Length: 337
Image 1 (cartoon, one colour):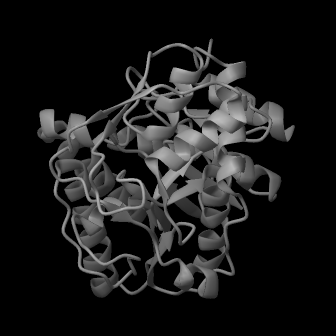
Image 2: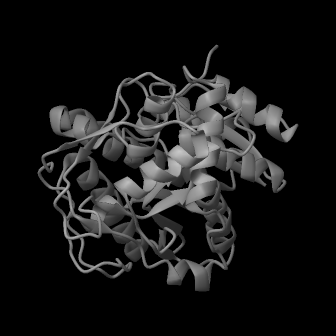
């Protein structure tokens, strides 16, 4: 069974490729390498001992995408390819709407022309916006508050409308919470361009000396230690969720939506202290003012995915930190060509 993975050279995409190959799927990766490196795919093949096909194609390139589908049959698509920085999306919103929304429309159009109707879509917990009263369920109010989140919500709406209009589509929307960690081998992991936007890679880079301290955005939230609480999920647990969603599509479910999270939250300080234990390094930090739009507490209710996908997270916070440190300590400058 041939699975096309858009954005497959990226952080979550590369780990999902490992899971797909080890499960016996044939994998075709499409990536423009704007925020990833081909080296990750070489290491995916090293880890699994299996080959995958790679095509350097942008999802906005209709002819390029069509040629990939024409080369060999594609049975389903896992769609990761997107610009993904919340802060950057505020600075360059047009590029985010053009790449994420227009790119997805182009992909869906090519899929339709090629008779492919199964897709797993990488969405985000950002679609819950500043909703209160966690845990968030799939039917919690939606309302993204930044351009990145709005692109995800718009794409979800596109899938919902398409499913309503054309019943032959099978689509799984997966709302990620906070992916962290790396493959246990330490060979692939998160390699952000520039200053990391997320907590765990920033902490890891402080631990290897690339930055002097972690900035904590807000120490006066209504939590046990005053710092914000998030639902961190190990990237390998997240990757496994994509395989379960892919299996779900084989039952012709139409449109299904699932939270992928652990169902519990950890504060920023809890993560820092756990990383100190995993790395053996002291992690300096400074308290900063809250950032506009940040919520104090966010975590998932993953019970629908537990029940309908037979999927549960297996990795602890200690596993997340240990694996993230193994990757960062072995690859202090990320991937090298």
